[in-house]
Amino acid sequence: MRDAPRSETPIPGPPPDPSRLSTAAVVVTLTPLVGLFVLDIVPVGQEIVGVALLACLPVGLLLGIAALIQHFRSPQLPGIGRAWFATIASLAQIALVASVVDALRHGLHGRVLRWRGRPVLPPVRVLAGPPPPMIGALEPADRLALANHWTRVAREEHASIGAFVRLGAALRHHRAPRALIDAAAVAARQEADHAARCFALASAYAGRSLVAGELPLPDAGPPTLVTLAVEALVDGCVAEGTGAAEAAALVRARSTVGPVHETLAVIARDEAEHAALSHAVLAWCLAVGGEPVRAAVTRAAARLIDHPAPMHGTTNSPVRRAHGMALRFEREAAWQAALASALTRAEEFQRPCAA
Image 1 (cartoon, one colour):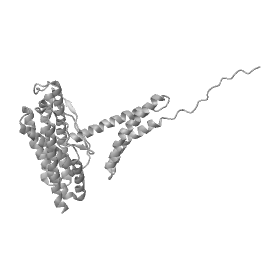
Image 2: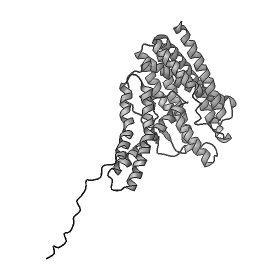
Image 3: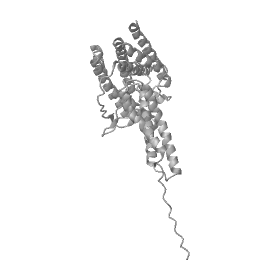
Image 4: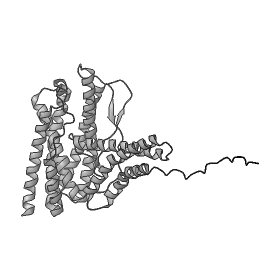
């Protein structure tokens, strides 16, 4: 009698290995987040660490996309969740860095408020109630561009209030001359006036009442003299100097509409005072800070020389120019004038120290 054929039961093999590509993508994507803490505790080599962290962002994105492609080709591999996480998280971090770079380039209408070295701006709130009176008979595209422009300027001016409050506190901490501390307090009040004026313009173009939202920031502690000096050069002498020169050029041309002309006249006068304050702060830091401050200012000045004039908020439209947006050549001229003045003064301030 023949034996009945035996059914062969397949022996289950080992489960497929997790996607190594997905795991690598997650590790690279999370590295910049961990690296933020490293930047706070490592006293040297921060620029090198920062460049390495930025390089992780596109690498993490490419690895995440490659892992997704691998999973679509081999669905049985586990780890597709990690691939999606790496891809989405990398995109989010790249968007965040882009917004930070945007703030760095465009802070021309007041002193920059920074948190751990990164510029921050307040959110915008819309108030209930009837809309404010509109300015001018404008095409929808022009009205939207002007509303966005003046909203951005208003946010920068509002952030400058906190920046000058922190500057005054830092000057007190380092026992700076009383005149500098008092000037910082005056500048903070002036920035509050600028913010109110600019939010009024933004509201008139947007057709709704806009105000600054809350911007709570933890106490970061007093900055060093090196930080004070570099911020005085970059954010004050150059950025505020550019804003003052640009506003003054628009005022001299007498070609902007009434409410905009009045606001620009105030900004041109006050920002020129703020730039002068920044020159004074820079001179004091160089006088008392010694070689570390001089070296840091020299490095910052070299970076500024290679930096192009930021063109955010400029226009080629005569209509938008009449409502406060500078032409590109006007921004370039203002930037070059402020940069030349800042570099010349910084060199003059350092000569007595070097002697």
